Image (cartoon, rainbow, N blue to C red; front, top):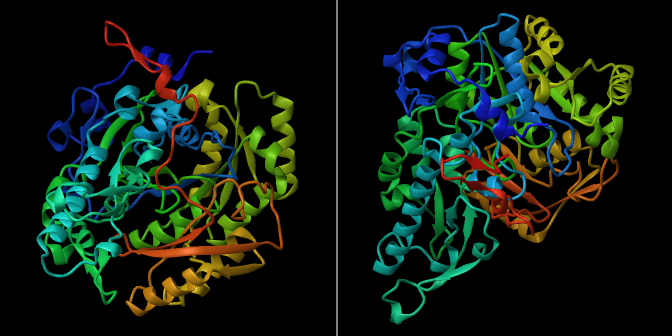
Length: 538
């Protein structure tokens, strides 16, 4: 079986101008980054503002195994399948992060004959968006420490700075640091600090939820960087640096246009963490795709309890999106671990939002047909339509049946229903998610969490949506509990407000915002030869 990079290298790539033409864009409408990648200016949204939106399809999954169940491969393959049956379609997915690429999970460009091209560029530096986010974030970090050093107004308590630094790499040794060491204060104020991975930056979350450049500037200005001695929040706008941060992001805000192996147009744009953020591609790319295509296939991170819930309750709410259908990815290995009850619970959760769902049983190379048919029978016995798909080895042809069913599903009208009102008290909103989506019996809050929630509400942020940070490996907050448990508690350990992004992050258990490398990181297998051919990427 050929590796992803071998398949990608053998495939014929069309020039990006030809891909743009498929969705009605001329060479003058795009900003090429070489022959196979381009930026599409956000200004084009104004040209198409009166054009009706296409239909939006979300790809999500059952509770995953550590290696993932192929959501991105399914998303890309489904886009190819829809194109094969004559539909004008676009795919909209997140950008890969270098951390996982050189760590454990590898890249995020799909796999086999359902991936986006050029694979090496997309998985590495791409168009520089993640670097722009890193620099904008760290500019703010530098300004904060200079503000402390210069004793500028407004006062920031050095022990109450909540803004860390970022790097787009897995490096556990940077989780906790001390800055300003040595030379009697010449190097700045000594204080505790730390690093997060770029995908965990609130700047990334903001970039993925804004509607235009001025909205970006305003949201960056609302970021809370720390608190003064009276616990009053200090904002980026108080420091006056949101304009400069916006300048650094002025190109990153434009969606990146690339192609799938079969020439389907794809936006790859933005990459926020799926735990402490909403885990979806940019709202701008999604909105633009809906104007340029009749059908748009997108995805959300992790299983449906985290990814789909945040996609609906955060992204769709903020962006005014109305998904026409959802695809729930199921695999043999995840099914063996979690069972049919887990699949049924995820399907039930999606239906709570008044979004119809169909299951894609994603075939892996060593799966037998009879094993997959058994899973399909279990799904249909529980009144969930299911289709066996083979996108990795067969490309778009491996999902024709699913594509046809989705076209019929998208003809039906529906209106999304959110599971909570944002004006409800914070605790009520958390409890609604815990009980309705996870199936928890009770919500427990630590003293710290109760104090933080009261402070958030007192500061006027209580009406924001909720973004729960929880293990993706279980409906519970314990990653070791598989399946579809009942009668369990969800314990909220702490909370914080991402005021710029516009949601409240609720922590359950221990959530790392700076991953570490595994014992055998993928970086050890990545190499390049004298002709510039890269090996080891996957």
